[in-house]
Image (tube, rainbow, N blue to C red; front, side, top):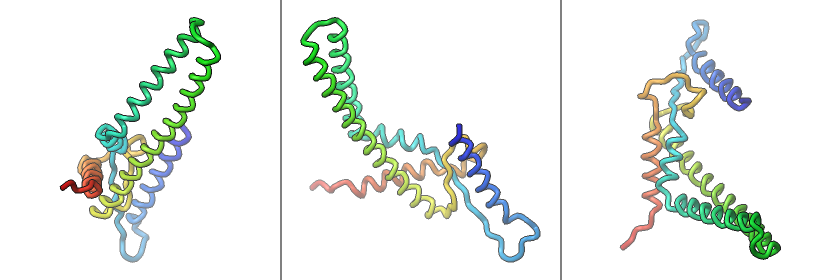
Length: 166
């Protein structure tokens, strides 16, 4: 709630600054501000869903959770060596922590790619601000949405990084 209020306040400040060039008492050249928006969630989901790493991490998470459930069921039913099962469960929890770190690094990698693409697209189209579509953007015409351009730019960057196979 607090972050939504801060984002709304920031958006209002941006709008106030961008509209300040419309004041009649201002002397000198008028500066226009170009604002665009994008749907960060959509871009992130598209990139995550295309990734083999995401699929691998998901599979690893599912296997880990399945194994943890098996051990917990054995502990509840009283079957097996309790001490050994507890050690196995702790080992799996440690593995879960390592997997959390891998998932976080993967998320940061995607967000870095998106950030780079947003910067490239913003410069190409001359945008001064790029907002994330959400609560802070109450209305905008579709022509100002640069989500597709950002997706294309990320894809272009990924193609440039792919090794050439001969």
